[in-house]
Each structure stands twice: as structure tokens, then as C-alpha cells.
Length: 130
Image (tube, rainbow, N blue to C red; front, top):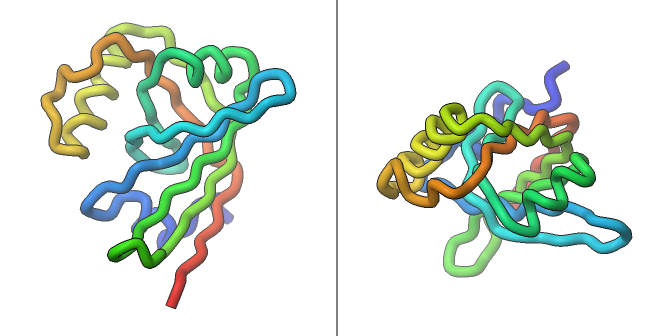
């Protein structure tokens, strides 16, 4: 059974795109930050730099939370856990950056200083609010 059900995939790829909150850890302290992402076939792509990237190089275990709301009232939340791989390849990063930026309606070359990170999803859960 795949870690990500068709229903969860539908939420992760829906329009408008939502912001994901990436949780990383360094030492004994967690770090959570918003990121744009792209999901396909059990893998989440992000491009990032700074503290998030440093944390991922030290400890590849991550979680992401993605949610949607209407006027501040939650509609659904997806929580993912997985293992990140930093992809130190300028061309692959440029291509992923363009894909992610297109998804969010931005110029393809925005934020070129970032590095590609691919997260293999190990588990996924969905909570809907009625």
C-alpha cells in the first residue's frame, strides 16, 4: 500500500496551491518554516537555503504539514513524514525551481540561490474538518 493515498494526493496537488510547513531538527531543537512545494509520486520537492538546508544536511528526517482553510476555518490538513535528500546539482535545482515557481504563479527564475531537496514520503495522514 502506498504511503500517500489518492485522496491525499488530490489535496497536495489541488489549486490553489497551499504553503507547506517544513519541520526540521538540529541537535535537540525543532525548526519549522513555511515553504512552497511540489508533490508527485510519493516525493515532495522543495528548494531552500539557510537554516532549513543546514538542518537537512545534518538530519534528513522531516515532517510537513499542509492545510487549507476558508476564512480561517480549517477545511483539511495533510501531515507527511519522510526522509530528505539534498540534491547538490545546479541544473536539477533550476528545473525544480521553475516547476515550483510555475505552480505558485511566479517567474520561473525567482529565488535562484536555493538548493533542491527531495523528500521521500514514508507516511501520510489526512484530517478533514466538517
